[in-house]
Amino acid sequence: MTGKVWIGCSGWIYSDWNGTFYPRGTRDYLEYYSSLFNTVEINSTFYAQIPRATILSWIRRTGSRDFKFSIKAPSALTHEKMLDSPDEAIEEFEDFLSLEIEPLKQAGKLAAVLLQFPPFFGEREFRSNLDTFAHIGGSKLPVFAELRDRNLLKERSEWLRSNGIGIVAVDSPDYPLSLFHEDSQYFRFHGRNSKDWNSRNGMEKYRYNYSNEELSHLFESVSRSLANHDQIFIYFNNHPGGNGPRNALAMSSFLAGSGSVQGRIY
Image (tube, helix red, strand yellow):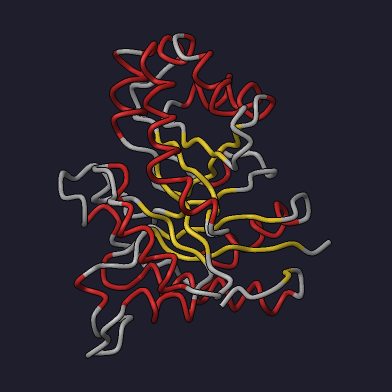
């Protein structure tokens, strides 16, 4: 069975990609990036609201290309309202939809919505947000949750899936890909830098270059998932030093050579 693979990186603007991924003198990074990949995961929305004019410029610059954006929900939702004020979480989600998701959806440029929860979001917090999760799942958008509490991942994944929210499969030092259900549809590859994983330096923890052997194993997991879905999403978040796009291009080559994908992947 063949399906659509959306593959790219978590972001496209990193200074150390100059000369490692972007040719020196590249003027429009998004134009160059979108010539090689068909999707990007936007993480800046986690920290602050993106102006509509900026989102419209993304849409314009990717033009008629088969290219889409996955958007991470704001920390105000996953790290504030759903923790401290669950009764205000639905309103926060609706604001996020209208201000940042709707323009991409209307333009046919929305890939998925990512909910990334902190490790301290556990069962108690989950139970306080059942109505919010049901509301988010009922939005009929492709929404995926990255859970960082192992018990929650084990006990609540099926409930979320049955309520319209998929589970993000990650690969990282503390959450190897083998922990996740082979039916996952959204993949985030953070790297395996166990030495610096708990470092306060946010850049160093993601400094990792997957070997060809490791990429081959990741490809096997992705392929099993692809057999069960009409589309999957893959994002490399090991961005320091240009490792993310380097590994994403290698994975694209694996996928293109497998004959199991539809349409453009790079």
